[in-house]
Image 1: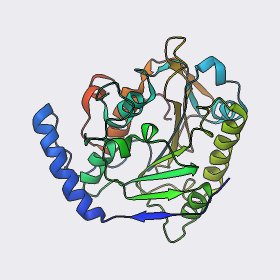
Image 2: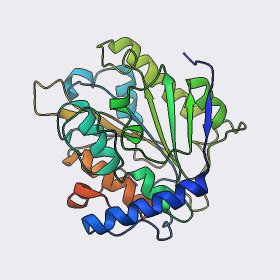
Image 3: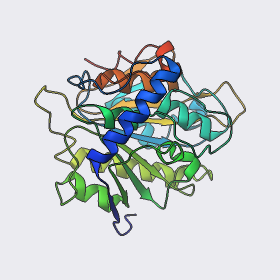
Image 4: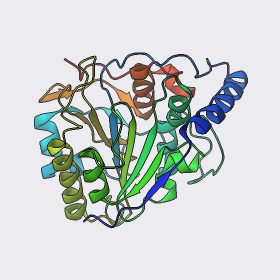
Length: 289
């Protein structure tokens, strides 16, 4: 499952300066507060791993073994909704609080959680892991929206090494976007393979010292997993869950949430500027003890 690791390094300080300028410009145009204030102590988690599967309704997938594990060990949201069709706008909504049109790819800079995090002091860097194959561009909103990325790595083995404290060890405070190519994320309707991929990610996180160690505030890393949209046959209600040591176990929440609420939750956790339509939705709060 793990492919050879490939690492891409960047100048985080330079990215921070450029992201701050971009965020300030975006704030002037939208009326939002610029991201540049000191990042707050984490509210719910120290770091967040975010992973997405493709194009299925809640009822189609909730019985998969990996999803049942999330239900038993974490918090599942039974009234979580995607906000659009096709895929691209949904990913952009989660990462930036906006659709930016209905094209699969817009290939232009817009403020994102990654740019807001890079502009914070200290920064909250974003890392992208292609766990199997390469994430399609339309499913990688940080590439689509020209976000500052602190590192890009290939393969589940690379993630395992970084979680174990290797040369490219993840910091205690970061956003990790983890995904798969379309043969591995259920886009091509191979549920068994996708289920095995998610199980491998859960096992990897559960076994890692990084995921099981709290920060100085007592906050642990967490995983947020969801689907980008349904199969366009229902009401866009999709499976979504939070999982990790700080998450309430075995909770099933019927509170209404959407991709914009996820974006709001990430912003509120680190005290970042709330982006776009995320300002109109409350954060996800019931998953925390």
